[in-house]
Each structure stands twice: as structure tokens, then as C-alpha cells.
Length: 240
Ligand code: SF4
Image (tube, rainbow, N blue to C red; front, side, top):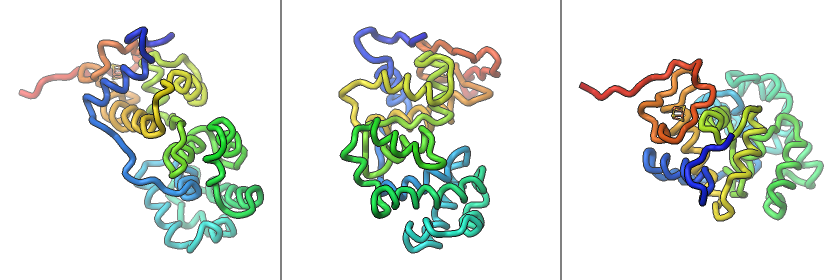
């Protein structure tokens, strides 16, 4: 089932335009190198941003280089990232993933990915332990690689389904459905912006998991509200 906003345009353009009007432009302020982004994204899954950023800064402060992290014992890494979700798995997989990059490339770098297609680069990243579609897309789109890929986290997945942009399925299904709707003219920055608008604007401020605020939503006229029936929909009330 597809959201119908304007037959001449991708439905993503209508969503982007409405969210831009509500939340304003969202452009990247700084980009990390791709290995640093891999480290950050690998510890971020199902973890609050503030918690994962603090853990990332502890890793940066403990290890002079990411090569040192690649050779660290999992117990050492675990002590630094203990408060992120699934910390033991991440502490075991992250050094292993970095060593696999070194073994494949010859040194610890992911810069060569910019010479590949998004599909090739995604395939290579997903072969690393602990790297799913979200981590792979964030390395490709958020880092200095700045490639045309969309990060689909739980907020983007949920809101895309409720809007009717994608059908039922897991986040990987939503990722492929949304990527198929991306206009050819959109840049990596445009995809970064869509992610931010759907996550931080729509997903976290209005279309929350248990209580979507449909009455205040800039997409309320177009939204199919798929699966919202069971949620506690909060209607907007003017301040008195
Ligand atoms: S109208 Fe409601 S369900 Fe649809 S995107 Fe907005 S808040 Fe979510």
C-alpha cells in the first residue's frame, strides 16, 4: 500500500516538504571518518544517543588509535561501553570487525568504499560482525564517505509503515522500500535530512510508538495511520 500525495512526484518528496516546513532544514554539521563512524554506529544499536556518544568518547580517550581498539581484549572494551545495550556482544564483535577490515584492506581504513556503488559498499560492510543494514547505512551516509544511503532506524521504520510508504515487514524491508522511492536527484545530504526529519522530528516528537500525536502532525491529511488503531492517539488541544 503506497501513500498517494502527488502522482507526479515521489511520495517521499511530499513527506520531506511537510516535515521541512514543520522542523526546518537538517544538514550535517560535521562528518566523521568512516572507521570512527563504524565504531560509533556499532555501539549505538538500541541505545540512547547520549549514552552511546558518552561510550564512544570513552573509547576515543582510552585508545590512541582505532588500531589499538582492534587489538583490545573484549573485557577492556566492555568496561568502557558497559552501559550500552548488548554491551558484551558489542565488546566482542567490534574489535573483531576492525581486525577484519585490516585483514581485507591491508590497514584500518574504509576510504576505498567511496569508489564502490552503494550496493557493493553495503555488501562489504554487512559481512562484518555486528553490522546490519542500519550500521552499514550510517557508515555510508553519515561519515565523510557521504554516499546516497538512507539510515532506517526504529523511528524511520515505524513512521514509514504508519504513513503507508512501505508495507509490513522488518526494518530491512522498509529500507529497501524507502530506497526505491528516493528521487534520483536527491544527494547524500538530502537522505541525511530525511532521516533526521523522520527520526528526530516526526518519530520522536509526534509519531511516538505508544501515543502518536496525530492531531498536531503536519502529515495528518495524507497519513494512512496503518497500525495506529491500537495506539493511544493523542489529539492536539490548543493552550488555554
Ligand atoms: S498522522 Fe499520526 S500516525 Fe500518521 S505520521 Fe502523523 S502522528 Fe504518525
